Amino acid sequence: KQEVTQIPAALSVPEGENLVLNCSFTDSAIYNLQWFRQDPGKGLTSLLLIQSSQREQTSGRLNASLDKSSGRSTLYIAASQPGDSATYLCAVPYSGAGSYQLTFGKGTKLSVIP
Amino acid sequence: GAGVSQSPSNKVTEKGKDVELRCDPISGHTALYWYRQSLGQGLEFLIYFQGNSAPDKSGLPSDRFSAERTGGSVSTLTIQRTQQEDSAVYLCASGMNTEAFFGQGTRLTVV
Image 1 (cartoon, each protein chain N blue to C red):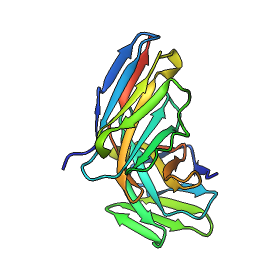
Image 2: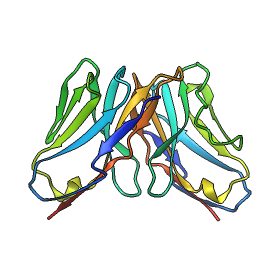
Image 3: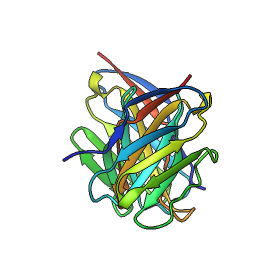
Image 4: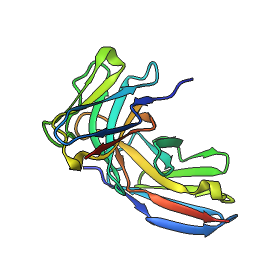
């Protein structure tokens, strides 16, 4: 069974800092890994998708890396802004049951202080 | 283009009543997922549809929950005889090649 862990559970940083969010997974046989953002009371917004053959993906101030062999991914946010405050979730497709349900971590709640 | 659309956005129902939640996926997406998120909790997998294959229902919490997907497009999640513990945000996602895009969710409150 795939398990996904995100550390830290919460993080508070002053505006302008660079920061790293961590995601680890127990089964390295993944197809890809996806990072999402969730604002309070809202759905999930897809940020980045890294295919299993890739080592990193970038979108604006966000950079996600993937190390399959060690079961880890990181999301790097450069020059953080108050608008980045949200919960960040990582997810991997799990095919153990013959389907490709996404297994999620519990998320990292980020607060960027002006 | 249009994203995943869920309706209603909010639903308040009395305990014991049946409810139906609707999900309109992104056109052409073959995969459709339902998740549940209780207050302050993580995402709980409910059911997964992929094309014409039999759905993965392994996450449905009880036989009061069911879902169907008509014509490979719109999906309806039905909860019969609702209980207070069913109160949560129900999230639908559609996708291709295991990349998922979520709707804004339906907030269900059972009173």
